[in-house]
Length: 255
Length: 248
Image 1: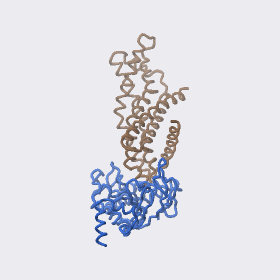
Image 2: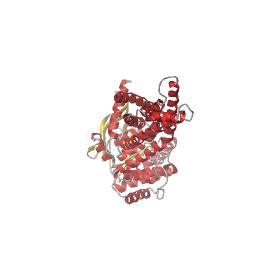
Image 3: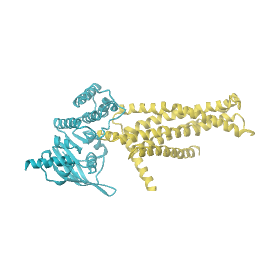
Image 4: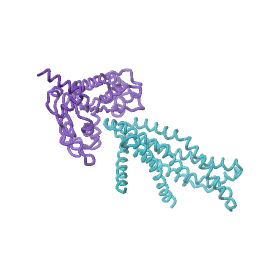
C-alpha cells in the first residue's frame, strides 16, 4: 500500500497542496482527478519522490520515502513503473531498445531472455512486430503503449500514470485505460493514475481522489460519482453544458 | 550575486559527487562512452585541423614581421611557433573552440532530455542519471580532447611551416633548425595537463548547465549559451593558474 500523510507543498509562498492524506490500494485503479492546476501532478511527483513536500510523509508499505538515502531510493524505484504524459520515449532508440533499456541497466538476463521479455511486453500492449520502429514513426496512442510496455518490463510493484489519455481520441483512450486496468488486476500492482478524463473515471475508477485548489475535496469510487451530492465533484463531473443538460434530463426522468 | 555563485558552486560539487558513483552496468556506460568518443573526437577533428593550420600560420607570420630588422636569429621562428602552440595556443584555442562546439551540444542534449522528461523517466527506473549521463561524456572527453589538442599542435607547426617557407620568408633549414632547438619535454607535459583540465571543465560545466534546465526552448538556449561562456571563462582562469603553478 502507498500512503500519503498530511502533504503540504509551497512554491515561493504559494500553497499548492494543503494537507493531503490518502492511501492507494493494490489491484485497483487509484485515480487522482481534478481541474488543471489543482495540484495533481505535484502530488504524483511527490508520491514518486521526484519532488519533496514542504511537510508530510509518503509511505511505501512500512518504508517512508523521504527517509531513504539515494541508494535505497534507487532500489525502491526499480519496483516502480511510470507512464509519462508525453510518453518520454528515448527518440534515438528503437521501440525495442526503449523497452529493453531497464533490462540492460538492471537485470542479469541473457540477451535471448531480454528479447523474450521485450517481445512479451510488446505483445501485452498489442504492438508485436513494431520492434524496430522509432518513436517518431508511431502514433500518440502507440507511443503511450510503448511507454506502458517499458513501465512494466521490470514487473513493477507500483505503476504511476500521468495523464495517460491526454492527446488521445476517446476510442484509443479506452484501449489505454483497459490495458492499464488489466495489467493492474492481473499482477495485483498499485496503480495511481493522474487524469481529468471522465471516461477513465467512470470506467476504471476503483478509488477516486478529487483534488480542488490543492486540497482533497472528495474520495470515493466510480459507483458513487453520480450519486454524490458533493458540489465540487458535481461541478467537476458536469462541467460542460451538455452534461449539465443530460443530468437535468436524468433527474427529471427519475422524478 | 555572491549567494547565487555559492549556490551553484555547492550544487555543482554535490552533483559531481553523484556523477562519480559506481556505474550500475559497466557495459551500458562503455557503449555510451564509445558513442561520445566518436561524437567528440571524430566529429571535431576537421574543425580542430582547420583552426590549427591558421594558429600556426598566424604565429609564424607575425613573428616573422616582428623580427624584421632585429638581431634575433632567423631560425627562432620554428622554435617560437613550436613552443607557442604546444604551451598555449593548441590547448587553449582548441578547448575554447570545443567549448563552443561540444559544450553547447552537451548542454542542449541534456537540456532536451530534461524537458522531454527523459531524465525523470531514467530516475524513476532507478538509474543514477548524473552518473549515467555525465560519466561516459567526461571519460570520452578526457581521452579524446588531449588527443585532439596533440593533433592540433602538430598541425599548427605544419601550418607555420606552410605560411613562411613556401612563401620565401624563411628557408626550410631555418624553420626545421628552430623546431629542433631548445626542446623541453616538460612543455608537452604542460600541454597535456592543460588539455585534461580544460576537457574536465568544458564537459562538466556544460553538462551541469543542461542537466538543471528548467522551462522551455528559450531557457534551453540560455543554458547552451551559459555553457559556452562559463566554460571559456573558466578555461582562461585555469589556464592562468596552471601557467602560474607549472612555470613558477
